[in-house]
Amino acid sequence: QQQVKQSPQSLIVQKGGISIINCAYENTAFDYFPWYQQFPGKGPALLIAIRPDVSEKKEGRFTISFNKSAKQFSLHIMDSQPGDSATYFCAASMYSGNTPLVFGKGTRLSVIA
Amino acid sequence: GAVVSQHPSWVICKSGTSVKIECRSLDFQATTMFWYRQFPKQSLMLMATSNEGSKATYEQGVEKDKFLINHASLTLSTLTVTSAHPEDSSFYICSSRSRGPAFYGYTFGSGTRLTVV
Image (cartoon, rainbow over all chains, first blue to last red; front, side, top):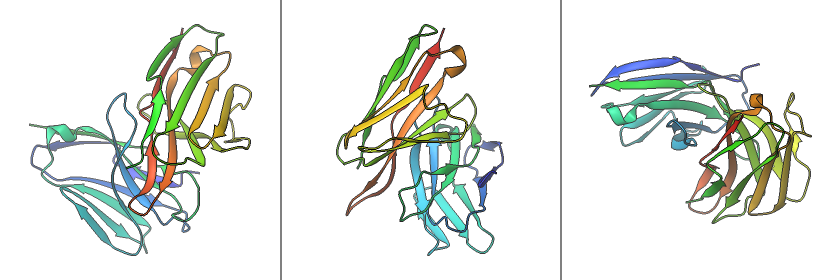
């Protein structure tokens, strides 16, 4: 059972454009939703995370939108740059427990000039 | 912020030999370490969860006798791939959860690329 569904699998965006990646979760006990960026041969690096008490969080060019009723959250990358080309993973877990993250399948983003 | 140091970053070994991967929490106490495996162009799949001083809990389908996890201290967890075979070639990543007054989240090691020949 896939607990976190991520789409699209791959994405090509023009430099300066907006990259949008979507995730949906099933477990209503999840209350911590981070996004990770991974470059080839490297471990995942935290980009931004959100909890259900807010519907949106912005950090620089990265914004998470969260819809609790739909059990969906998305990552928006504004003014996308070639350096943003990487694989992005959404994830979910329970904030107060000591449980592992459950990852989406990932989105390979290519930003072209 | 919290840092998890993972070594080695890459290793090549012969089929049938064992390989040890270490993860150290440098500035926090890692009471729990999560071990993931990632095949090319795939997501991170949880292999096991280890708690300091107790036996690891393995996910379904992961052979506990092949992937030995030791978490003897609050700052060190190791994964030993025993009698490695080419199908064990993968990217192994550790992660721990850090909590503090100024930070929270999951910290990942930089990963270990294992190639079994």
